Image 1 (cartoon, rainbow, N blue to C red):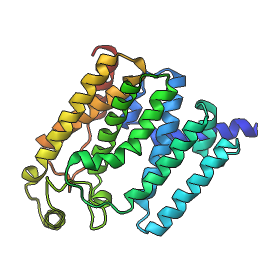
Image 2: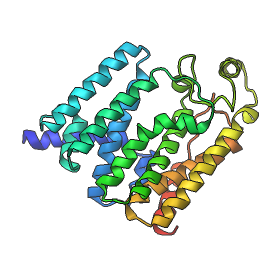
Image 3: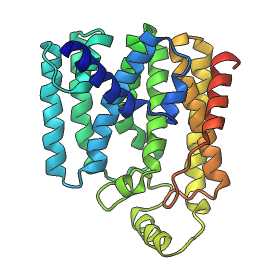
Image 4: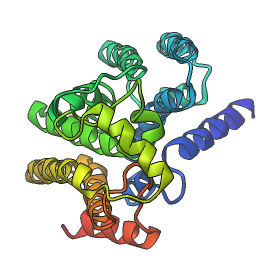
Length: 284
């Protein structure tokens, strides 16, 4: 009975963390088989748990303590003694091996780099950090779902990096500050960006000129990633392709709404998400 209760608690925790009703990943996994959905849910719950540490801990010292705790928890996972609901869930739905252990530890270590982010010259450089964190989770997801082609996995990693960069872009209180800046220098200098944030808080100003080039560049990358993965024609990538289309449509909405990245979190309606998910899974 205790084992059943613990499994239920772990499942509920991961669902609430990774695929709550109405979220993009909820719709992206709506048509997945249960086994594949479990893999996707568990790995993304782990990703979002680490992401929450960055978002919720204003004190870098506390954030590092929590990241270190997760390093220890990964060791417990591979010793078959997990304590956290996410690792208790993962132990039953993914294949544990040394490569996975190394990747998990590397992801946690690289999340430390989110505590202080220097502005990069361009988007490609900014995405390097996402390749080693969110992108690596997507890469692992592809492996756990049975993909073996290295080229396909690299495309999938790149897709995950862009997708999660866009998610962070809409959380300026965490990722557009004096100590963290994910918007590249060739888009807007950090001093100008911080001044723009102050002006935005005072009144409504036009942000299109500042951010439309970045959103258009993200759209281009999303299109390139989509075309590349569509050619691979692997069912394992279906949920990733859906997330790609949701991200692309979100970019369009951001552009249509005046690129209000510093003041508005843009999201698609549930009905539109459902339509995109259905079309991407069964028709496109």
